[in-house]
Length: 301
Image (cartoon, rainbow, N blue to C red):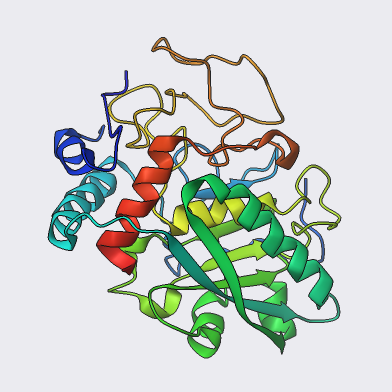
């Protein structure tokens, strides 16, 4: 059962100190990478920090288990206290990194639609997104296997500082829709900071049920400090947010009234941090909005 978490921005720090964390093939011909290169967060099955298509069996290389989550939360509480707890309106400058090969050169109109999706999804959170630049890179190797080539790609392309979102597109394989880094990792790995999404997950893409742009919404949530709604399952502090009901496992499709834990509330299948279809994902909670503001203050402000 989840413990009580934050309810207001003013009471945020006190609530944080009370937490005790609990222990379809993709397009193209690129094969799923088996590289051992570590990544901050992937979308894969339960407790993985990214998003996958229904029925996919992606193995995540660096999932945040209970020990890592506990360490992250301890550091977060310390840095949030040092930040003074300021949670102002946040404007994120977006460097849209279009990596392409024989396909994947997204149009300006598609990029505008993706930016609109982000701003609509985060409207209640006080987070806005401004397109700082669109950078197009013709590199078939990076486009065809962004997992294996993540380090080279990001080291060559990443622009801006901690407050800048680098959003990369590529042809992800094996059902993987995207992955993201967490705010806590910026200091040690600034060049790897950012979000990577499947180029066909953008509005109007060809990935049925995942082509309305909400893979980016989901992954940016991780980039702003949110865990999955099913983090930790039914036990402990779960996703570290009090007003997202506990959820045993990822939701697939849009199973309204699904209820996998005995604690109060049905599963948050409409939450952007679950695994539902794009059409099912419609909301962040007040607690998630507060956590994003606090994570920004602690790590990106």
